[in-house]
Image 1 (cartoon, one colour):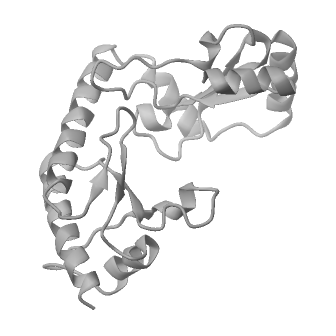
Image 2 (cartoon, one colour):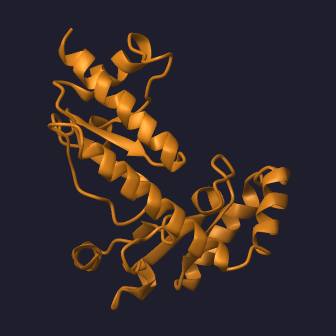
Length: 213
């Protein structure tokens, strides 16, 4: 964040930070907002949404925060010139304001359990490498396969274990540099712990089947 702050100053840039996962932090970590950076208060923008926080994926309700009054004035004009989000999403978003703060405490604890369960199960698979995530609800892992994208296709089209398979996101799409992420995948630990255990068991068999083709 400090490096980005220096770049914003050097090249006269605005710095936009998507902080939609800021409640999803574990291990006593504290999120750091772009709005707390010193010396560039007039060019920092924080973006947020209800989609992750309340498991409302697809609900296009969010907010934008900045200390730059001129910027906010211009953005309000754009907001008034465009169509509004769906009415049903607005009604649902309004109700989230009534959810007590304890909701986030329980939510973090549940996702921490899911993260720990996923990490424990992945460690049982030979050749899998990963760093336990400290936030959000995704885990990047390097798998013992030659091509993660082809492996993902294999799992969906040619593999099942008792009519079950695993869907995952190939890692190469998350990199700009060609070639990076070829053996990596992104796993979302959005299932219950017992379902995550089963999913990684299926994944382990899938890896063996893929490499034995």
